View (tube, rainbow, N blue to C red):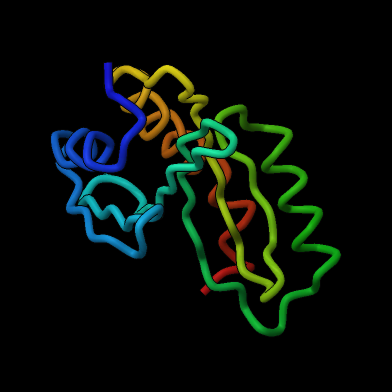
Length: 130
Protein backbone atom coordinates (compact mmCIF):
# COMPACT_ATOMS: atom_id res chain seq x y z
CA UNK A 1 0.00 0.00 0.00
CA UNK A 2 1.32 3.43 -0.99
CA UNK A 3 0.83 5.91 1.81
CA UNK A 4 -0.69 9.24 0.89
CA UNK A 5 2.51 11.25 1.35
CA UNK A 6 4.43 13.06 -1.36
CA UNK A 7 7.66 11.08 -0.92
CA UNK A 8 5.79 7.74 -1.10
CA UNK A 9 3.82 8.78 -4.18
CA UNK A 10 6.98 10.10 -5.84
CA UNK A 11 8.77 6.82 -5.14
CA UNK A 12 5.84 4.86 -6.60
CA UNK A 13 5.84 6.97 -9.78
CA UNK A 14 9.60 6.50 -10.11
CA UNK A 15 9.22 2.73 -9.66
CA UNK A 16 6.88 2.79 -12.67
CA UNK A 17 9.66 4.42 -14.71
CA UNK A 18 8.56 8.05 -14.51
CA UNK A 19 11.08 10.85 -14.12
CA UNK A 20 9.64 13.07 -11.40
CA UNK A 21 10.42 16.72 -10.74
CA UNK A 22 8.81 19.00 -8.20
CA UNK A 23 6.58 21.91 -9.17
CA UNK A 24 5.74 22.94 -5.61
CA UNK A 25 5.23 21.09 -2.32
CA UNK A 26 1.95 19.50 -3.54
CA UNK A 27 2.44 19.07 -7.31
CA UNK A 28 4.95 17.23 -9.44
CA UNK A 29 5.70 16.70 -13.13
CA UNK A 30 6.09 13.10 -14.20
CA UNK A 31 7.43 12.19 -17.63
CA UNK A 32 7.78 8.79 -19.26
CA UNK A 33 8.59 7.83 -22.84
CA UNK A 34 5.56 5.50 -23.08
CA UNK A 35 2.88 7.64 -21.42
CA UNK A 36 1.49 11.16 -21.48
CA UNK A 37 3.52 13.69 -19.54
CA UNK A 38 1.57 14.25 -16.35
CA UNK A 39 1.24 16.73 -13.55
CA UNK A 40 0.10 15.05 -10.38
CA UNK A 41 -1.14 16.64 -7.20
CA UNK A 42 -1.65 15.27 -3.73
CA UNK A 43 -4.92 16.85 -2.61
CA UNK A 44 -5.03 16.24 1.15
CA UNK A 45 -8.19 18.31 1.59
CA UNK A 46 -10.21 15.95 -0.62
CA UNK A 47 -8.06 12.85 0.00
CA UNK A 48 -7.37 12.49 -3.72
CA UNK A 49 -4.43 11.73 -5.92
CA UNK A 50 -5.06 13.89 -8.99
CA UNK A 51 -3.35 13.31 -12.32
CA UNK A 52 -3.61 15.88 -15.11
CA UNK A 53 -2.28 16.34 -18.62
CA UNK A 54 -2.38 19.68 -20.43
CA UNK A 55 -2.40 20.45 -24.16
CA UNK A 56 -2.23 23.92 -25.65
CA UNK A 57 -5.42 24.79 -27.48
CA UNK A 58 -5.20 26.42 -30.89
CA UNK A 59 -5.93 30.13 -30.73
CA UNK A 60 -8.40 30.00 -33.62
CA UNK A 61 -10.56 27.18 -32.22
CA UNK A 62 -14.28 27.24 -32.80
CA UNK A 63 -15.24 27.03 -29.12
CA UNK A 64 -18.61 25.36 -29.74
CA UNK A 65 -17.03 22.62 -31.87
CA UNK A 66 -14.22 22.19 -29.33
CA UNK A 67 -16.72 21.77 -26.49
CA UNK A 68 -18.77 19.33 -28.58
CA UNK A 69 -15.61 17.26 -29.18
CA UNK A 70 -14.84 17.32 -25.44
CA UNK A 71 -18.40 16.21 -24.62
CA UNK A 72 -18.03 13.33 -27.11
CA UNK A 73 -14.72 12.33 -25.50
CA UNK A 74 -16.30 12.41 -22.03
CA UNK A 75 -19.15 10.16 -23.16
CA UNK A 76 -16.66 7.58 -24.43
CA UNK A 77 -14.36 7.39 -21.42
CA UNK A 78 -14.57 6.46 -17.74
CA UNK A 79 -11.14 7.14 -16.24
CA UNK A 80 -10.54 10.55 -17.83
CA UNK A 81 -12.47 13.77 -17.66
CA UNK A 82 -11.80 16.20 -20.50
CA UNK A 83 -12.25 19.95 -20.04
CA UNK A 84 -11.16 23.35 -21.33
CA UNK A 85 -9.38 25.67 -18.93
CA UNK A 86 -9.68 29.46 -18.82
CA UNK A 87 -6.93 29.86 -21.42
CA UNK A 88 -8.68 27.60 -23.94
CA UNK A 89 -6.32 24.69 -23.36
CA UNK A 90 -7.35 21.04 -23.17
CA UNK A 91 -7.06 19.52 -19.70
CA UNK A 92 -7.31 15.79 -19.09
CA UNK A 93 -8.08 14.94 -15.47
CA UNK A 94 -7.87 11.65 -13.59
CA UNK A 95 -8.47 11.08 -9.91
CA UNK A 96 -7.78 8.28 -7.45
CA UNK A 97 -9.44 8.43 -4.00
CA UNK A 98 -6.62 7.96 -1.52
CA UNK A 99 -7.82 8.50 2.04
CA UNK A 100 -6.17 5.31 3.28
CA UNK A 101 -3.54 5.16 0.57
CA UNK A 102 -3.65 3.19 -2.65
CA UNK A 103 -1.94 0.22 -4.22
CA UNK A 104 0.63 0.27 -6.99
CA UNK A 105 -1.89 -1.72 -9.07
CA UNK A 106 -4.45 1.08 -8.70
CA UNK A 107 -1.86 3.66 -9.70
CA UNK A 108 -0.75 1.58 -12.69
CA UNK A 109 -4.39 1.12 -13.79
CA UNK A 110 -5.04 4.86 -13.51
CA UNK A 111 -2.06 5.64 -15.75
CA UNK A 112 -2.39 2.82 -18.30
CA UNK A 113 -6.18 2.82 -18.65
CA UNK A 114 -6.22 6.60 -18.75
CA UNK A 115 -3.69 6.64 -21.58
CA UNK A 116 -5.58 3.86 -23.42
CA UNK A 117 -8.74 5.95 -23.28
CA UNK A 118 -6.92 9.03 -24.57
CA UNK A 119 -5.73 6.99 -27.57
CA UNK A 120 -9.36 6.08 -28.31
CA UNK A 121 -10.52 9.71 -28.47
CA UNK A 122 -7.37 11.47 -29.71
CA UNK A 123 -8.78 11.77 -33.23
CA UNK A 124 -11.80 13.66 -31.90
CA UNK A 125 -9.62 16.24 -30.16
CA UNK A 126 -6.43 16.44 -32.27
CA UNK A 127 -7.62 19.27 -34.52
CA UNK A 128 -8.14 21.54 -31.49
CA UNK A 129 -4.67 21.31 -29.89
CA UNK A 130 -1.19 22.27 -31.01
